[in-house]
Length: 367
Image (tube, rainbow, N blue to C red; front, side):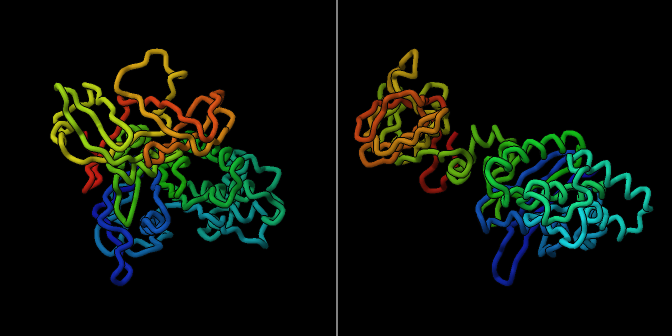
């Protein structure tokens, strides 16, 4: 088994806490992603798993073995870096074979592993090439190959796609998924890109200020964010946040704010939500959960609000609209064929069954 477990792991640099009591587990053969903005502690967490940073407090286990004091070379891990870290004077074959040579593997075994990895990655014809002769994507595959030949218990990836152009990143994401399905090696992957996190991770840990704010499968994080930071970080464009008050009229709940009064569906009027009646809250609605009357077959009451379009961004498969709603900026993802222009007043419809409410003080989700 190659589980990776972190138990209350903390890292301090002097008086600064970079990682604060992080507890999470990557199960055997699982692909786990750590995601968050720059400085959130994700790379420091990965480097502690790798043994490149000392743990200030807490425990790290790989399998059943506590590895806090185990040197990196003895942890049975392989790490792929952002900058590939290839030896420029060596050809692809020797870059991939270098770690095995250091470990005194037999020549025949080295050759077998290198050629199998090269075939898996589609770079067999590049084995005699130097890194400078390769494209960014090919260099990334060599770095992957160097990790694969080690046959480690755990792969650690530190933003490996960030130096690639957008189109190549999409292709490499798919290739990494395929690779993981074939090798079934436990993987911990660090990125600042929420799209990478959502598409690659079987589970995702969203980090901020050294803390893990939510750790769950991608769909749960998207549908049920634990707090405003997670809700705003996951999803593009980000979730709309509007100041509001929860009101009750004739037994029905409404979210009311500047320029809108929207009906809370019965199934969303939980005891926790009802506990906020008469209180200020933050109302959250994703851009993709906003429609126009032309896009909806059955129009339900208590969902409409009006906004003046400021900017339209046609993207071919969708139309992003930025609108002013009584001083609130609202972003909507709409049908690209709608004839909506800047300066136009538009009636929007909120998918209230997919609304989000947050405590104004703690920013935690209200469910």
